[in-house]
Image (cartoon, rainbow, N blue to C red; front, side, top):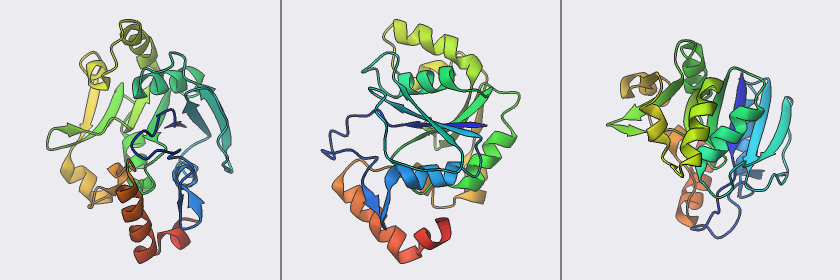
Length: 204
């Protein structure tokens, strides 16, 4: 299984690189990598210009540039799938430090007959904590060439397995896998959570 980390955003609300913000002495992207390394044979980091981000892992890390720059998360998914050596890939954002490895593993176990496996909570989809088939890449390319950037547009074109709330709750009852850092307030909350719950010592 390949994992793709999307790190091509502009971080406009935070005003600085989200991937490199530190929680309990470890960068956001390193928190993500440490979770994904348990599940992956390779990790691909998709960035706007292919710039390397300081990080480390026991599995191979490859950095790729967005093939169609400036077209949002969908192009990061596309660029990662094109570079992937696996038939399917976990896709997450670089700013989601509290991913549930159990939830991600569950999605990989049921993905073989679907093009996309994506969590859904009260009709809200979580497309940046999902599993995508490499077969989606041609359809995504077509959408991008039409300047269509909505990920849910892809879902109307492929076979999707929705992971419902009761399934999510078995692994992540607080839904922290979907908590991403957009602002200083989000970062402050993440730091408080990590400190209060001693997560760094358990995840290191």
